[in-house]
Length: 262
Image (cartoon, rainbow, N blue to C red; front, side, top):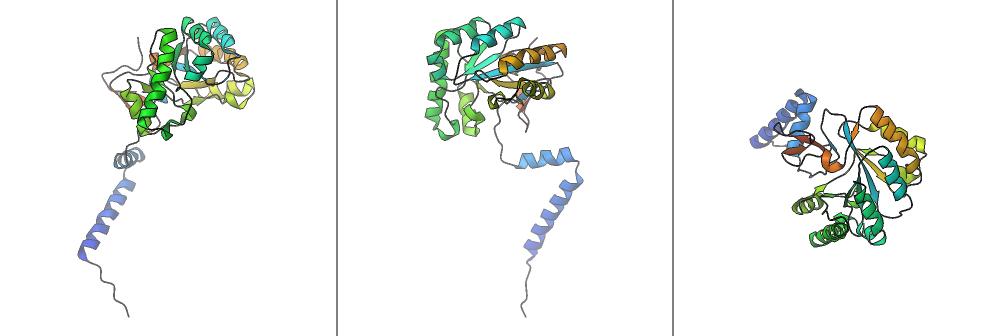
């Protein structure tokens, strides 16, 4: 017959674990989640959206490949007097410098989508900085404005990516409303996806050179403006200082900071 001896320290340890778990269960859901998040390793998140009570949102386009509809997009946006943010790849700037200038001249933000569209998480910090600054240099040379926003290719990021972008005096931007236009959805499906998911503080993702985006965009702009939304470039939506980012990537202002520019 085997005897199992349980030491006093072991009993105390398991008792403490039991009490801690029971205490978490007794807490309300939000408090328990907060405790668990505090204990978990901190994950650095990009900005997916902004907390605001105002009906304000941003529309963005990623430009990495084709250029067949850029002029159409500019005309549509001009018709509705809407300014947006275009995230462009440095190699796209090399191929279409005249389009970069047209976007900037039309009042749209031209921001950084890397120089060669790599998975940033697979790069060294030195190579990350090369991707950021090479693209920034190309955009600044044409527009006269150095980008302050970065969208990682493929939406692929890590703590190292975000901290490197931050050290480069830039904000990492994602989205909370995905049009999925790159999947060649119909204009009706793109319209539905966007308009049913936009909320105050949302950032919407489109792509230039997507098959049905030029057809869906006027419908979306009309719906959003009729619903009372003001559409602004991302740099006018996000909070520049004194903010936190919650577990969903929502940017939340500190009490002394307003959520949008006046």
